[in-house]
Length: 64
Image (cartoon, rainbow, N blue to C red):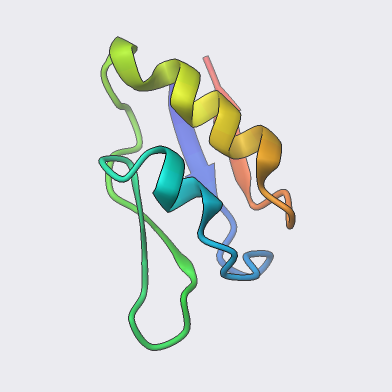
């Protein structure tokens, strides 16, 4: 799994951080997503997929 985020698309909703805090964080100044782990362990894959699917700005991409 490889994760990429488009910070230009991110609207700062924070759903990704709530679902997978070991993978995603938010910048303090504006809430934009920060990717902490672009290749997380297998036990986090389902949460990462869910975070990508519920992202209101479609700012998270997941490839295998």
